[in-house]
Image (cartoon, rainbow, N blue to C red):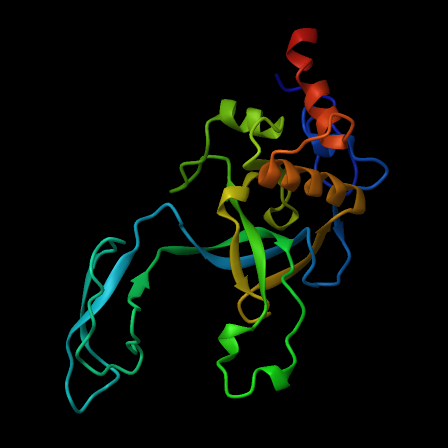
Length: 249
């Protein structure tokens, strides 16, 4: 069931069987112009398709006088297979013990910051050590377009409706400002992944979840991560209320 009662304002018209519709007095998304790394911030980044089988790269031929080019072979990555070490020096593909090179399909997609990482580590504690060991990362949850169109498979309308009603703790439904307030999107909390806390790899937007919305997002994360959901919480009350909609109709 989808009701015609919808919330108006600077945000999209959320259907009344969505938790965003009941957020008062704040809108759900706020354009604060800050572009800061904070929980609830909408960002864009190249994120891998984690359900896609990656490929390992193996250098099979290189010229001794040219270390920037090589002929390579791609083969499906098998975690049980032995690690193959390249015997050809290729500058862009250095080989280190215990490592292989992998290729993933990636796409620049919207995501929500769900953790901002820890504090910066003082430089005196990183002397003569690779910065990658201690450079801060954020954790983001990717959004996927829910509607069919072009090469996008989308999701079934029945599934989207259930996600909108918060039936599954690993899926979150929303409508994003950076997509023109037109497309249903589904965020996957079971695909939370790290990206560098760096504006060169993360495109941070002006939009962040409102203070009231952050409370609900935190409740949803606690439900997903620990299975705890208080009946008297905003999320718990919504799930109880929306479960009665079909009965009332």
